[in-house]
Image 1 (cartoon, rainbow, N blue to C red):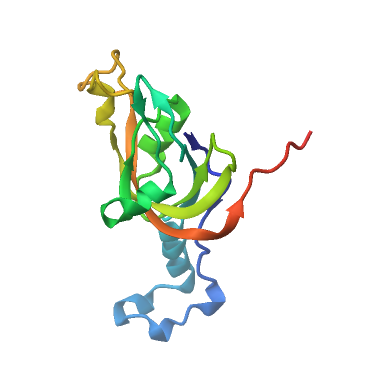
Image 2: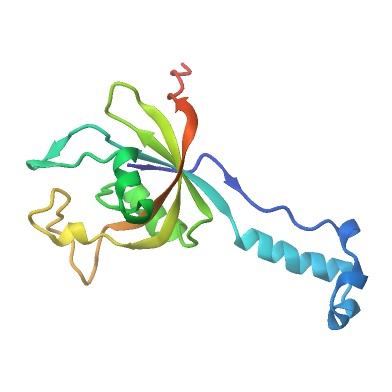
Length: 178
C-alpha cells in the first residue's frame, strides 16, 4: 500500500550573491545574475525529490489462495535488487504511482513492513522506473485481477522499486497522538 509523501523537498535556487559572471561562458556573460538565477530556479523546481512510504507484508498472506508475501529480504534477492511494485488497489495511491512518480531516482522510498509482529520502516529504496500499467489486473488467475479493467482503459499502475540500504535501526510507527 502506498502512502502520500510526508514532505516534498526542492533543490535550493542559486543565491544571486554567489553568481560569478566571469565563470560563465562568454555568451552567458551578457546575461545578468538575476536572469541566471531565474533559469536556475526553474530547473530546481522541476527536479522535486519526494519521499514515499511503501508498505509490504513480509510474512505469508494469502489472497485467493496465492501467497502475496513480499518483504525487504525478497526485494534484496531480486535481480539487481529491483522489483515491480504491483497489486496496488487504492485509487489515491494509483494516482501517485501514475502521475507523481515520473522521474526515477528522484523518488526515495521508505520500505515499511506491515501486518507482522514488528511493524515499521526497515529499508531505504528508490523508484527505479516511472509508473506504468500493472499487468496483474488483466490476469484472472492473479489475486490482483480486476474484471472491470481493460487494456484500452487500465485502472491500475505500478512502479519499479530498487533496494538501496537497510536503515541503521528498525523505525517503528508513531504511537497515536490523541
